[in-house]
Length: 469
Image (cartoon, rainbow, N blue to C red):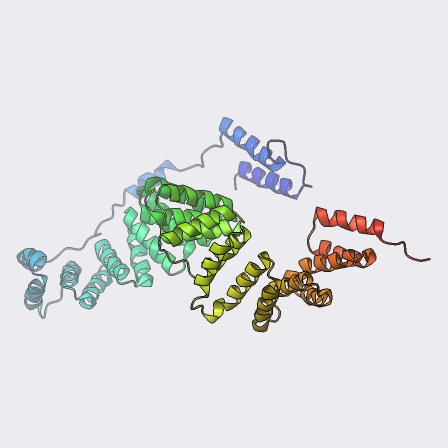
Protein backbone atom coordinates (compact mmCIF):
# COMPACT_ATOMS: atom_id res chain seq x y z
CA UNK A 1 0.00 0.00 0.00
CA UNK A 2 1.35 3.45 -0.95
CA UNK A 3 1.99 6.06 1.80
CA UNK A 4 -0.87 8.21 0.48
CA UNK A 5 -3.33 5.31 0.54
CA UNK A 6 -2.14 4.22 3.99
CA UNK A 7 -2.66 7.74 5.37
CA UNK A 8 -6.15 7.82 3.87
CA UNK A 9 -7.10 4.50 5.49
CA UNK A 10 -5.78 5.66 8.87
CA UNK A 11 -7.59 8.99 8.65
CA UNK A 12 -10.89 7.45 7.60
CA UNK A 13 -10.64 4.86 10.38
CA UNK A 14 -9.98 7.57 12.98
CA UNK A 15 -12.90 9.59 11.65
CA UNK A 16 -15.22 6.59 11.95
CA UNK A 17 -14.03 5.79 15.46
CA UNK A 18 -14.21 9.39 16.69
CA UNK A 19 -17.29 10.53 18.69
CA UNK A 20 -20.10 11.52 16.34
CA UNK A 21 -20.68 15.22 15.77
CA UNK A 22 -23.55 17.18 14.29
CA UNK A 23 -23.52 17.46 10.50
CA UNK A 24 -22.87 20.86 8.97
CA UNK A 25 -25.78 22.96 7.74
CA UNK A 26 -25.23 21.69 4.20
CA UNK A 27 -25.61 18.10 5.44
CA UNK A 28 -21.94 17.14 5.26
CA UNK A 29 -20.28 15.24 8.10
CA UNK A 30 -16.66 15.57 9.31
CA UNK A 31 -15.83 12.43 7.34
CA UNK A 32 -17.37 13.97 4.20
CA UNK A 33 -15.25 17.10 4.72
CA UNK A 34 -12.07 15.07 5.18
CA UNK A 35 -12.62 13.05 1.99
CA UNK A 36 -13.43 16.23 0.03
CA UNK A 37 -10.25 17.93 1.27
CA UNK A 38 -8.16 14.81 0.52
CA UNK A 39 -9.53 14.65 -3.03
CA UNK A 40 -8.67 18.33 -3.55
CA UNK A 41 -5.09 17.77 -2.39
CA UNK A 42 -4.76 14.71 -4.61
CA UNK A 43 -5.95 16.76 -7.60
CA UNK A 44 -3.38 19.46 -6.87
CA UNK A 45 -0.52 17.06 -6.04
CA UNK A 46 -1.28 13.68 -7.62
CA UNK A 47 0.64 10.65 -6.38
CA UNK A 48 3.39 9.44 -8.73
CA UNK A 49 2.58 6.53 -11.01
CA UNK A 50 3.91 3.11 -9.91
CA UNK A 51 7.34 2.27 -11.29
CA UNK A 52 7.39 0.06 -14.41
CA UNK A 53 10.56 -1.31 -16.02
CA UNK A 54 10.32 -0.36 -19.75
CA UNK A 55 12.52 -3.34 -20.69
CA UNK A 56 9.77 -5.65 -19.38
CA UNK A 57 7.43 -4.67 -22.19
CA UNK A 58 10.12 -5.16 -24.84
CA UNK A 59 11.09 -8.54 -23.47
CA UNK A 60 7.49 -9.80 -23.28
CA UNK A 61 6.56 -8.43 -26.70
CA UNK A 62 9.45 -10.22 -28.37
CA UNK A 63 7.82 -13.61 -27.78
CA UNK A 64 5.20 -13.69 -30.53
CA UNK A 65 2.38 -16.18 -30.07
CA UNK A 66 3.69 -18.75 -32.50
CA UNK A 67 1.69 -21.84 -33.45
CA UNK A 68 -1.61 -20.41 -32.18
CA UNK A 69 -3.48 -22.13 -35.03
CA UNK A 70 -2.62 -25.64 -36.32
CA UNK A 71 -2.30 -26.39 -40.03
CA UNK A 72 -3.96 -29.03 -42.17
CA UNK A 73 -2.03 -31.50 -44.26
CA UNK A 74 -2.01 -31.03 -48.04
CA UNK A 75 -4.45 -33.90 -48.48
CA UNK A 76 -6.80 -32.48 -45.85
CA UNK A 77 -6.65 -29.03 -47.41
CA UNK A 78 -7.46 -30.41 -50.82
CA UNK A 79 -10.47 -32.21 -49.36
CA UNK A 80 -11.49 -29.09 -47.48
CA UNK A 81 -11.46 -27.04 -50.70
CA UNK A 82 -13.74 -29.58 -52.34
CA UNK A 83 -16.12 -29.61 -49.37
CA UNK A 84 -16.21 -25.98 -48.29
CA UNK A 85 -18.92 -24.92 -50.75
CA UNK A 86 -21.00 -27.97 -49.83
CA UNK A 87 -20.84 -27.07 -46.12
CA UNK A 88 -22.91 -23.97 -46.68
CA UNK A 89 -25.52 -25.56 -48.94
CA UNK A 90 -25.63 -29.24 -48.00
CA UNK A 91 -23.69 -29.86 -44.76
CA UNK A 92 -25.01 -33.44 -44.37
CA UNK A 93 -23.60 -34.44 -47.78
CA UNK A 94 -20.33 -32.62 -47.05
CA UNK A 95 -19.98 -34.57 -43.78
CA UNK A 96 -20.47 -37.91 -45.57
CA UNK A 97 -17.91 -36.93 -48.18
CA UNK A 98 -15.29 -35.98 -45.62
CA UNK A 99 -15.96 -39.08 -43.50
CA UNK A 100 -15.44 -41.29 -46.55
CA UNK A 101 -12.25 -39.55 -47.63
CA UNK A 102 -10.54 -39.59 -44.20
CA UNK A 103 -11.65 -43.04 -43.07
CA UNK A 104 -8.74 -44.85 -41.47
CA UNK A 105 -6.53 -41.74 -41.35
CA UNK A 106 -5.22 -39.79 -38.31
CA UNK A 107 -6.67 -36.29 -38.70
CA UNK A 108 -4.79 -33.12 -37.83
CA UNK A 109 -6.25 -30.84 -35.11
CA UNK A 110 -7.16 -28.35 -37.84
CA UNK A 111 -9.18 -30.93 -39.75
CA UNK A 112 -10.82 -32.13 -36.53
CA UNK A 113 -11.97 -28.55 -36.10
CA UNK A 114 -13.35 -28.50 -39.65
CA UNK A 115 -15.20 -31.77 -38.98
CA UNK A 116 -16.59 -30.32 -35.78
CA UNK A 117 -17.97 -27.34 -37.72
CA UNK A 118 -19.45 -29.66 -40.34
CA UNK A 119 -21.24 -31.77 -37.74
CA UNK A 120 -22.43 -28.62 -35.95
CA UNK A 121 -23.89 -27.23 -39.18
CA UNK A 122 -25.63 -30.53 -39.89
CA UNK A 123 -27.18 -30.50 -36.40
CA UNK A 124 -25.19 -33.40 -34.93
CA UNK A 125 -23.99 -31.61 -31.80
CA UNK A 126 -22.74 -34.75 -30.03
CA UNK A 127 -20.30 -35.58 -32.82
CA UNK A 128 -19.37 -31.91 -33.22
CA UNK A 129 -18.30 -31.83 -29.57
CA UNK A 130 -16.21 -35.01 -30.00
CA UNK A 131 -14.21 -33.43 -32.83
CA UNK A 132 -13.82 -30.05 -31.10
CA UNK A 133 -12.57 -31.81 -27.97
CA UNK A 134 -10.16 -33.85 -30.11
CA UNK A 135 -8.82 -30.63 -31.67
CA UNK A 136 -8.11 -28.88 -28.34
CA UNK A 137 -6.71 -32.05 -26.79
CA UNK A 138 -4.14 -32.31 -29.58
CA UNK A 139 -3.59 -28.53 -29.80
CA UNK A 140 -4.42 -26.84 -26.45
CA UNK A 141 -3.93 -23.28 -27.76
CA UNK A 142 -6.47 -23.73 -30.56
CA UNK A 143 -8.49 -20.59 -29.77
CA UNK A 144 -11.25 -20.98 -32.35
CA UNK A 145 -11.93 -24.56 -31.30
CA UNK A 146 -12.26 -23.47 -27.67
CA UNK A 147 -14.59 -20.67 -28.78
CA UNK A 148 -16.82 -23.01 -30.78
CA UNK A 149 -16.96 -25.44 -27.87
CA UNK A 150 -17.99 -22.54 -25.63
CA UNK A 151 -20.66 -21.29 -28.00
CA UNK A 152 -22.09 -24.80 -28.36
CA UNK A 153 -22.17 -25.25 -24.57
CA UNK A 154 -23.65 -21.78 -24.10
CA UNK A 155 -26.39 -22.48 -26.66
CA UNK A 156 -27.27 -25.79 -24.98
CA UNK A 157 -27.32 -24.12 -21.53
CA UNK A 158 -24.38 -26.20 -20.31
CA UNK A 159 -23.05 -23.22 -18.41
CA UNK A 160 -20.31 -24.92 -16.34
CA UNK A 161 -18.76 -26.28 -19.55
CA UNK A 162 -19.17 -22.91 -21.28
CA UNK A 163 -17.31 -21.26 -18.39
CA UNK A 164 -14.39 -23.66 -18.91
CA UNK A 165 -14.23 -22.95 -22.64
CA UNK A 166 -14.68 -19.16 -22.59
CA UNK A 167 -12.20 -18.85 -19.73
CA UNK A 168 -9.68 -20.72 -21.88
CA UNK A 169 -10.41 -18.37 -24.80
CA UNK A 170 -9.67 -15.32 -22.68
CA UNK A 171 -6.54 -16.93 -21.27
CA UNK A 172 -5.39 -17.47 -24.88
CA UNK A 173 -5.80 -13.77 -25.66
CA UNK A 174 -9.42 -13.40 -26.84
CA UNK A 175 -10.49 -9.86 -25.91
CA UNK A 176 -13.77 -9.79 -27.82
CA UNK A 177 -16.41 -8.03 -25.63
CA UNK A 178 -18.90 -10.73 -26.59
CA UNK A 179 -16.66 -13.43 -25.15
CA UNK A 180 -16.38 -11.54 -21.88
CA UNK A 181 -20.13 -10.95 -21.85
CA UNK A 182 -21.03 -14.58 -22.50
CA UNK A 183 -18.55 -15.71 -19.84
CA UNK A 184 -20.09 -13.22 -17.41
CA UNK A 185 -23.55 -14.59 -18.12
CA UNK A 186 -22.41 -18.21 -17.66
CA UNK A 187 -20.64 -17.36 -14.40
CA UNK A 188 -23.80 -15.61 -13.22
CA UNK A 189 -25.87 -18.68 -14.01
CA UNK A 190 -23.56 -20.99 -12.05
CA UNK A 191 -23.54 -18.58 -9.09
CA UNK A 192 -19.99 -17.16 -9.34
CA UNK A 193 -21.10 -13.54 -9.07
CA UNK A 194 -17.80 -11.81 -8.33
CA UNK A 195 -15.99 -13.01 -11.47
CA UNK A 196 -19.24 -12.55 -13.41
CA UNK A 197 -19.27 -8.88 -12.42
CA UNK A 198 -15.66 -8.49 -13.56
CA UNK A 199 -16.38 -10.06 -16.94
CA UNK A 200 -19.51 -7.97 -17.51
CA UNK A 201 -17.45 -4.86 -16.79
CA UNK A 202 -14.82 -6.04 -19.26
CA UNK A 203 -17.52 -6.62 -21.87
CA UNK A 204 -18.95 -3.14 -21.32
CA UNK A 205 -15.51 -1.58 -21.55
CA UNK A 206 -15.35 -2.79 -25.15
CA UNK A 207 -19.05 -2.41 -25.95
CA UNK A 208 -20.48 0.27 -23.60
CA UNK A 209 -23.97 0.36 -25.07
CA UNK A 210 -24.72 -3.36 -25.02
CA UNK A 211 -28.00 -3.72 -23.13
CA UNK A 212 -27.45 -7.46 -22.52
CA UNK A 213 -24.29 -6.87 -20.53
CA UNK A 214 -25.78 -3.87 -18.72
CA UNK A 215 -28.75 -5.99 -17.68
CA UNK A 216 -26.45 -8.78 -16.51
CA UNK A 217 -24.42 -6.40 -14.38
CA UNK A 218 -27.66 -4.88 -13.13
CA UNK A 219 -28.91 -8.28 -11.96
CA UNK A 220 -25.71 -8.86 -10.02
CA UNK A 221 -25.91 -5.46 -8.34
CA UNK A 222 -29.55 -5.99 -7.38
CA UNK A 223 -28.82 -9.45 -5.96
CA UNK A 224 -25.96 -7.99 -3.97
CA UNK A 225 -28.15 -5.08 -2.77
CA UNK A 226 -25.75 -2.62 -4.38
CA UNK A 227 -28.65 -0.31 -5.12
CA UNK A 228 -26.59 2.78 -5.85
CA UNK A 229 -24.70 1.06 -8.66
CA UNK A 230 -27.84 -0.66 -9.88
CA UNK A 231 -29.74 2.61 -10.06
CA UNK A 232 -27.02 4.21 -12.17
CA UNK A 233 -27.17 1.33 -14.67
CA UNK A 234 -30.94 1.16 -14.93
CA UNK A 235 -31.12 4.91 -15.54
CA UNK A 236 -28.97 4.36 -18.62
CA UNK A 237 -31.27 1.57 -19.79
CA UNK A 238 -34.37 3.72 -19.34
CA UNK A 239 -32.70 6.67 -21.06
CA UNK A 240 -31.55 4.60 -24.03
CA UNK A 241 -34.70 2.48 -24.46
CA UNK A 242 -37.58 4.33 -22.74
CA UNK A 243 -40.28 2.29 -24.47
CA UNK A 244 -39.25 -0.97 -22.81
CA UNK A 245 -41.61 -1.29 -19.85
CA UNK A 246 -39.42 -3.87 -18.11
CA UNK A 247 -36.68 -1.28 -17.57
CA UNK A 248 -39.08 1.10 -15.82
CA UNK A 249 -40.31 -1.79 -13.68
CA UNK A 250 -36.73 -2.77 -12.81
CA UNK A 251 -36.00 0.85 -11.87
CA UNK A 252 -39.02 0.86 -9.57
CA UNK A 253 -38.06 -2.51 -8.08
CA UNK A 254 -34.58 -1.21 -7.24
CA UNK A 255 -36.04 1.82 -5.50
CA UNK A 256 -38.50 -0.37 -3.60
CA UNK A 257 -35.65 -2.67 -2.54
CA UNK A 258 -33.77 0.39 -1.29
CA UNK A 259 -36.78 1.44 0.79
CA UNK A 260 -37.56 4.45 -1.44
CA UNK A 261 -41.16 3.71 -2.29
CA UNK A 262 -42.16 7.32 -2.93
CA UNK A 263 -39.38 7.56 -5.52
CA UNK A 264 -40.62 4.30 -7.03
CA UNK A 265 -44.10 5.80 -7.29
CA UNK A 266 -42.66 8.84 -9.09
CA UNK A 267 -40.83 6.61 -11.60
CA UNK A 268 -43.92 4.51 -12.29
CA UNK A 269 -46.08 7.62 -12.63
CA UNK A 270 -43.68 9.06 -15.23
CA UNK A 271 -43.73 5.82 -17.18
CA UNK A 272 -47.52 5.57 -16.91
CA UNK A 273 -48.00 9.12 -18.16
CA UNK A 274 -45.81 8.29 -21.17
CA UNK A 275 -47.80 5.12 -21.84
CA UNK A 276 -44.90 2.74 -21.21
CA UNK A 277 -46.32 0.72 -18.31
CA UNK A 278 -47.77 -2.75 -18.67
CA UNK A 279 -50.96 -3.76 -16.86
CA UNK A 280 -48.94 -5.57 -14.19
CA UNK A 281 -46.85 -2.46 -13.57
CA UNK A 282 -49.98 -0.33 -13.23
CA UNK A 283 -51.24 -2.82 -10.66
CA UNK A 284 -47.96 -2.37 -8.79
CA UNK A 285 -48.41 1.40 -8.90
CA UNK A 286 -51.91 1.05 -7.44
CA UNK A 287 -50.58 -1.26 -4.71
CA UNK A 288 -47.89 1.27 -3.79
CA UNK A 289 -50.51 4.04 -3.61
CA UNK A 290 -52.59 1.88 -1.29
CA UNK A 291 -49.63 0.99 0.91
CA UNK A 292 -48.64 4.65 1.26
CA UNK A 293 -52.25 5.59 2.14
CA UNK A 294 -52.55 7.67 -1.05
CA UNK A 295 -56.21 6.79 -1.17
CA UNK A 296 -57.52 8.93 -4.08
CA UNK A 297 -54.63 7.89 -6.32
CA UNK A 298 -54.99 4.21 -5.41
CA UNK A 299 -58.75 4.24 -6.00
CA UNK A 300 -58.37 6.05 -9.34
CA UNK A 301 -55.74 3.59 -10.59
CA UNK A 302 -57.67 0.51 -9.49
CA UNK A 303 -60.77 1.91 -11.15
CA UNK A 304 -58.90 2.53 -14.41
CA UNK A 305 -57.74 -1.07 -14.39
CA UNK A 306 -61.27 -2.36 -13.79
CA UNK A 307 -62.75 -0.03 -16.41
CA UNK A 308 -60.23 -1.42 -18.87
CA UNK A 309 -61.46 -4.95 -18.08
CA UNK A 310 -58.07 -5.80 -16.57
CA UNK A 311 -58.19 -8.47 -13.89
CA UNK A 312 -57.42 -7.18 -10.39
CA UNK A 313 -57.68 -10.43 -8.48
CA UNK A 314 -59.37 -10.96 -5.13
CA UNK A 315 -56.70 -9.28 -3.01
CA UNK A 316 -56.72 -6.04 -4.98
CA UNK A 317 -60.51 -6.03 -5.16
CA UNK A 318 -60.57 -6.26 -1.37
CA UNK A 319 -58.04 -3.44 -1.11
CA UNK A 320 -60.16 -1.34 -3.46
CA UNK A 321 -63.30 -2.10 -1.43
CA UNK A 322 -61.63 -1.04 1.80
CA UNK A 323 -60.27 2.17 0.22
CA UNK A 324 -63.70 3.05 -1.15
CA UNK A 325 -65.20 2.39 2.28
CA UNK A 326 -62.61 4.77 3.73
CA UNK A 327 -63.78 7.39 1.19
CA UNK A 328 -67.44 6.74 2.15
CA UNK A 329 -68.16 5.54 -1.41
CA UNK A 330 -70.22 2.70 0.01
CA UNK A 331 -72.10 1.68 -3.14
CA UNK A 332 -68.89 1.38 -5.16
CA UNK A 333 -67.22 -0.39 -2.27
CA UNK A 334 -70.05 -2.89 -2.21
CA UNK A 335 -69.58 -3.52 -5.94
CA UNK A 336 -65.86 -4.26 -5.52
CA UNK A 337 -66.50 -6.35 -2.43
CA UNK A 338 -69.21 -8.33 -4.20
CA UNK A 339 -66.83 -9.05 -7.08
CA UNK A 340 -64.23 -10.33 -4.63
CA UNK A 341 -66.75 -12.47 -2.76
CA UNK A 342 -68.19 -14.11 -5.87
CA UNK A 343 -66.45 -17.47 -6.03
CA UNK A 344 -63.80 -16.58 -3.49
CA UNK A 345 -61.33 -19.34 -2.58
CA UNK A 346 -60.89 -20.27 1.11
CA UNK A 347 -57.57 -18.41 1.34
CA UNK A 348 -59.33 -15.09 0.69
CA UNK A 349 -62.40 -15.67 2.88
CA UNK A 350 -60.84 -14.00 5.98
CA UNK A 351 -60.00 -10.93 3.90
CA UNK A 352 -63.53 -10.78 2.55
CA UNK A 353 -65.01 -11.01 6.05
CA UNK A 354 -62.73 -8.24 7.29
CA UNK A 355 -63.60 -5.92 4.40
CA UNK A 356 -67.32 -6.66 4.81
CA UNK A 357 -67.19 -6.04 8.58
CA UNK A 358 -65.40 -2.72 8.04
CA UNK A 359 -68.01 -1.79 5.43
CA UNK A 360 -70.82 -2.44 7.95
CA UNK A 361 -69.00 -0.59 10.73
CA UNK A 362 -68.36 2.49 8.55
CA UNK A 363 -72.15 2.76 8.11
CA UNK A 364 -72.80 2.12 11.81
CA UNK A 365 -74.57 -1.17 11.10
CA UNK A 366 -73.20 -2.56 14.35
CA UNK A 367 -75.19 -5.81 14.69
CA UNK A 368 -74.08 -6.88 11.18
CA UNK A 369 -70.52 -5.75 11.84
CA UNK A 370 -70.47 -7.70 15.13
CA UNK A 371 -71.78 -10.86 13.48
CA UNK A 372 -69.22 -10.61 10.65
CA UNK A 373 -66.31 -10.08 13.07
CA UNK A 374 -67.51 -13.15 14.97
CA UNK A 375 -67.52 -15.16 11.72
CA UNK A 376 -63.92 -14.11 11.10
CA UNK A 377 -62.91 -15.11 14.64
CA UNK A 378 -64.44 -18.52 14.03
CA UNK A 379 -61.89 -18.94 11.22
CA UNK A 380 -59.00 -17.19 12.98
CA UNK A 381 -59.53 -17.02 16.77
CA UNK A 382 -56.45 -14.83 17.35
CA UNK A 383 -57.02 -12.39 14.50
CA UNK A 384 -55.91 -9.06 15.97
CA UNK A 385 -58.00 -6.88 13.65
CA UNK A 386 -61.12 -8.96 14.32
CA UNK A 387 -60.72 -8.78 18.12
CA UNK A 388 -60.33 -5.00 17.99
CA UNK A 389 -63.19 -4.65 15.51
CA UNK A 390 -65.49 -6.84 17.59
CA UNK A 391 -64.62 -4.90 20.73
CA UNK A 392 -65.47 -1.60 19.02
CA UNK A 393 -68.72 -3.05 17.69
CA UNK A 394 -69.66 -4.21 21.22
CA UNK A 395 -68.84 -0.74 22.55
CA UNK A 396 -71.01 0.89 19.91
CA UNK A 397 -73.80 -1.54 20.81
CA UNK A 398 -73.50 -0.63 24.51
CA UNK A 399 -72.04 -3.91 25.79
CA UNK A 400 -68.93 -2.56 27.49
CA UNK A 401 -68.23 -5.75 29.42
CA UNK A 402 -67.91 -7.78 26.22
CA UNK A 403 -65.93 -4.98 24.60
CA UNK A 404 -63.46 -4.97 27.49
CA UNK A 405 -63.14 -8.74 27.29
CA UNK A 406 -62.22 -8.54 23.59
CA UNK A 407 -59.72 -5.74 24.17
CA UNK A 408 -58.09 -7.73 26.98
CA UNK A 409 -57.76 -10.65 24.58
CA UNK A 410 -56.24 -8.38 21.92
CA UNK A 411 -53.62 -7.06 24.37
CA UNK A 412 -51.96 -10.49 24.25
CA UNK A 413 -51.34 -10.18 20.49
CA UNK A 414 -48.27 -8.05 19.63
CA UNK A 415 -49.82 -6.55 16.47
CA UNK A 416 -52.91 -5.40 18.39
CA UNK A 417 -51.45 -4.57 21.82
CA UNK A 418 -50.96 -0.84 21.23
CA UNK A 419 -54.51 -0.20 19.98
CA UNK A 420 -55.99 -2.51 22.62
CA UNK A 421 -54.28 -0.60 25.45
CA UNK A 422 -55.62 2.67 24.02
CA UNK A 423 -59.15 1.24 23.87
CA UNK A 424 -58.91 -0.03 27.44
CA UNK A 425 -57.60 3.33 28.61
CA UNK A 426 -60.50 5.02 26.81
CA UNK A 427 -62.97 2.79 28.65
CA UNK A 428 -61.46 3.70 32.01
CA UNK A 429 -61.43 7.41 31.20
CA UNK A 430 -65.07 7.24 30.13
CA UNK A 431 -65.90 6.13 33.69
CA UNK A 432 -63.42 8.61 35.18
CA UNK A 433 -61.19 5.81 36.39
CA UNK A 434 -58.09 7.91 35.68
CA UNK A 435 -55.75 5.92 37.89
CA UNK A 436 -56.71 2.69 36.08
CA UNK A 437 -56.17 4.32 32.69
CA UNK A 438 -52.55 5.26 33.48
CA UNK A 439 -51.00 1.73 33.19
CA UNK A 440 -52.63 1.18 29.82
CA UNK A 441 -51.30 4.50 28.50
CA UNK A 442 -47.83 3.72 29.85
CA UNK A 443 -47.79 0.32 28.15
CA UNK A 444 -49.01 1.85 24.89
CA UNK A 445 -46.17 4.41 25.03
CA UNK A 446 -43.67 1.64 25.66
CA UNK A 447 -44.84 0.02 22.43
CA UNK A 448 -45.01 3.18 20.30
CA UNK A 449 -44.07 6.73 21.12
CA UNK A 450 -46.81 9.31 20.53
CA UNK A 451 -46.99 12.95 21.53
CA UNK A 452 -50.78 12.80 21.87
CA UNK A 453 -50.62 9.78 24.18
CA UNK A 454 -47.87 11.42 26.26
CA UNK A 455 -50.06 14.51 26.66
CA UNK A 456 -53.05 12.36 27.62
CA UNK A 457 -50.94 10.44 30.15
CA UNK A 458 -49.78 13.71 31.71
CA UNK A 459 -53.40 14.85 32.12
CA UNK A 460 -54.41 11.51 33.63
CA UNK A 461 -51.65 11.81 36.21
CA UNK A 462 -52.93 15.26 37.08
CA UNK A 463 -56.54 14.09 37.37
CA UNK A 464 -55.83 10.82 39.17
CA UNK A 465 -56.40 11.00 42.94
CA UNK A 466 -53.28 11.14 45.04
CA UNK A 467 -52.39 7.77 46.62
CA UNK A 468 -53.65 7.48 50.21
CA UNK A 469 -51.04 7.88 52.94
